[in-house]
Image (cartoon, rainbow, N blue to C red; front, side, top):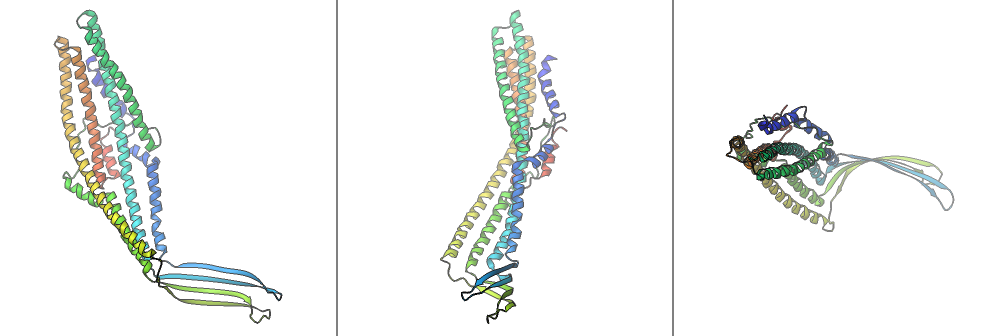
Length: 432
């Protein structure tokens, strides 16, 4: 029974982690509520949506009330009060700059939506990465502790065999060295686990509970579609970084037209009602109150503004060129992310398959070395090497699975298709 303790130790540790543990969906829900970056993105979205009514305001009428009350003194004696009130309505009839600003406001709202959608995808990736980083750190610690248990058994066996004269002191020294190294690695693994847990705490705003591990014997599959061409096409059309830059280019083009409007005439419909109360011009002491109404069209033709309009147009043209290059950069970046993540998924699946075979081989090698040690054809160091190989393979296998899952999420993010439904799908891979 003692020879199977390391494997049992690992299995028991995984089962203990899976019991009453928080899963990825629960952690993600906590992050949506408590993550300050996501909250900042929500506030930015709310602010961005206000651009539309601000842009529309330039096309709507304005209404204003003005007035004055003055007291006048005359040198010859006497004084009088005068009052004036005016209610003015102005409705733009032709203001090309205002119309372009309104069109820009709609694009700005769409850009705010794209930016928030990108923040949602980033939250999924950050939460998933932090979640599986903790699982990886837990696996490393678990395997090191299991290896330390196995080395402890071999150290006790080496000491006992040395005392009865069936082994040399070298076996004891080698086992002791492996044990001391395992203790040092355990301290490092515990520290790394605390760092990973602190990273997740930064996102969800509270110490994370124990996390549900992946299901035992899990089989991973390639995301659909399997061809990289479809992912590249999606990245060029649906990647939110690309969409944001496309909107930025349209905004820059509208900005050129808006600045050129500085050369264009403006036409407004203006209506007003005036009330005036003052003494009569005959100075007979009578107070005269008059009401007047007016309506008409007011136009203005700019002739010269010190070359300011021309300069602003040149500036906006240069900024349009910059935005066009930024769009191309965003497209290339999205496509590179797709290629990198796609290859990461393919490579990860191949590594998982190879490491699964290596785990079986390493377990067989360990069993053979234990049997050989019992019959005297293997020494203590052979068992220690075989144990280390098995635990290292198991650790690498777990990491390969985590990396494959994360690369699958990154692939969907680069293609612009990552949603909360993918969180549910990954959550289904965990022990419930």
